[in-house]
Length: 529
Image (cartoon, rainbow, N blue to C red; front, side, top):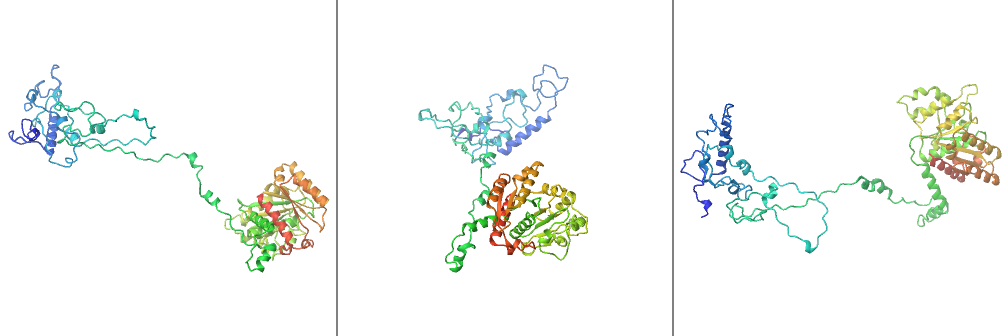
């Protein structure tokens, strides 16, 4: 039988038990003993201010230096071995962690004993001892492993004791154990806890954690836009123009050649016209000479935009007095003009105004899917459009139309002409392959550059129309070279008999060559928007 299992002189007496009924104390009794000592310590009277200065430190009672009548003096504790460190473990074993009747051996002073402060043991409170060790610290962050050392440099690491893991320091070693080694206690050492049971050491595991991302690295990561941009181009579809379309129709689709170069260019031009625009856009057609085909260009550019974009296109005659745009367009049941709209402009400033309310002022062009706003047609009227009137009309119409193609007059010094040039997102310079109209166009370019509109000239599109079935090729080459150095591009449109009569323009009556030429012109204009 082990000495710790035999009751002897070192067995403590439970509160309220007879002195000869000595037995080991349970945890409940230990807590009761600690509570009784704490209450008795709180009930001790404070030292009197009149206590003699030679009173020993820690003296209690009414008389300085005299212990309490029920207290046991330090001499009575001589010979009583009390070693809390050796007898009460700081870490419970797994079997005893939940047992409430664990019995601890070792003599304790009787209930009511309060030794002087100088002779009290330095043991921590029993409640702290019963709680066990504090939780282990959080594992350090994972860092890159250092290079592996050579075999000659490898040292066997020493294993820390359980108490080191809990408190960070080496616990004191009891004097009763002569066989314990000096230094850190190895794993499995008894250290007075149980019958040689080893204290388990919790394994230290590396917790993986996500590396912080750098914003600079995220900039190079693909997004949804990159995924959509990588999609293959849609199929071109079967040929619908040229001999390729004829072969496909004759064979019932068994032989389907790919579209030819002309058809591919046609599809590219249509795609340019249908491009998305950031808000309403204004195209201004200029040449200060009459007969330069400004009105024809205005109507055909607007018709091409309307047919391929699906409406919300306006052709606007910005002549300060009277122009011919209304005469070259399809008529409407009314004869309202820009002057009438200007007089009723207040009704369109309200939020409830709709595009359909403009039908009483503009003239719809049927299948061409664009509208026409004519200039004043009243011969007896003295009304005119100035810069203020133009800006008011332009501000209101921009709420209802995506593209506005404006036909200008012949007076470049007119305020409404200058206001239209300032509002232009794209300028179109038109001329026929004739000396007079081409010289007028060149003079207009020089005037624009001299008045601070050189930027608009560099982005402009020049359109050269053939006035007859046969044109002057030498003059056409001179015009290409001159305007090609001043403007963004120069394009040719062929002669078309359907435009000679001067009546309302029927887009479907144009030749296929003319429609393709005006599609290329409109695509170039859209590229500048």
